[in-house]
Length: 68
Image (cartoon, rainbow, N blue to C red; front, top):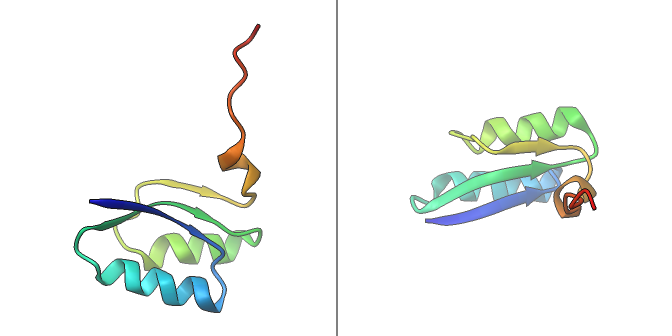
């Protein structure tokens, strides 16, 4: 199984999303687009999406603080 993140859900993101959906061993685990409507579309088009939906890429790249 290959896990992928869809970053950007414009024209090319939609194209990639449709391709990922067609690949049997591919699972979209995250979708990012600054436009929430587009991000939701990206999550829907990939089918079986069970990952997280974000509107800001830094929400994925930030690491939790250790609290120290």
